[in-house]
Image 1 (spheres, one colour):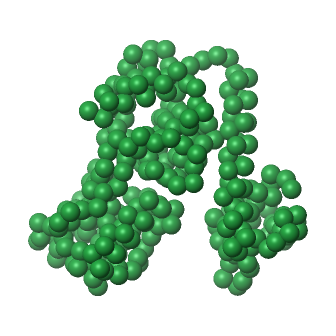
Image 2: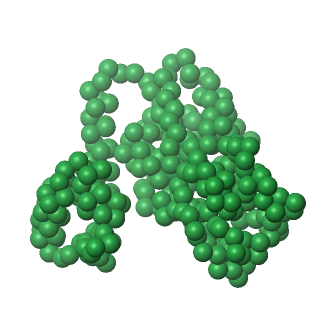
Length: 292
């Protein structure tokens, strides 16, 4: 079994198609990819993928295998990153990530926490989806990130905020006349929510609607705010998004609170417990200042 076998399986599982994974992610031929997956299945001794005209999906055995495959790849990437850092001249760096949109709220206070170190440390800032930030932390490519508490990653989290969910709608929607939107107002409307990649948001909204006794089907699952805004404006649907989305609203989209007690979604600082960066330890020691 080779690392490329694991990377190929993960790519197919995420793409949901051998052809899509081969052409767009792995830049290889579909027959070659199929042979590699069959070689992996022969090595493991069970079928990991079910193939059909509709695409490829993990079998129960594949579901059991994939998390370990991802962890193995993360450990390899972390080892490579550690070797590269060790080979470079000693220089203090600190890489910090933000779920896209959160940098508007959290970058200024984060930089204030680091103010005593800025003259001696090169700080890099990235913006990305929350699951991708978690992966970068696990691989050692980021020192710290503001993100969701993502399942499936061996990380430490400190919750620094809880954002209420807000309802986004077109600026001329009939519900703009209301001060707050009731859960039952979603019935019959196009609903835009978190995709399977946005696992935390997806779970929070599902739990909310179940808790109020409603079955609201997801019409459009999205994992980035730009697509949320586009779909709200173009489909005239309703979206249920964390409050930070209000930082990104175009003129065509407005927000309203939910009536009653709104569900919340956590904003957390994530980091790897194996990271020995002195700058990270300094940052963590000043968390009370950041949260305040």
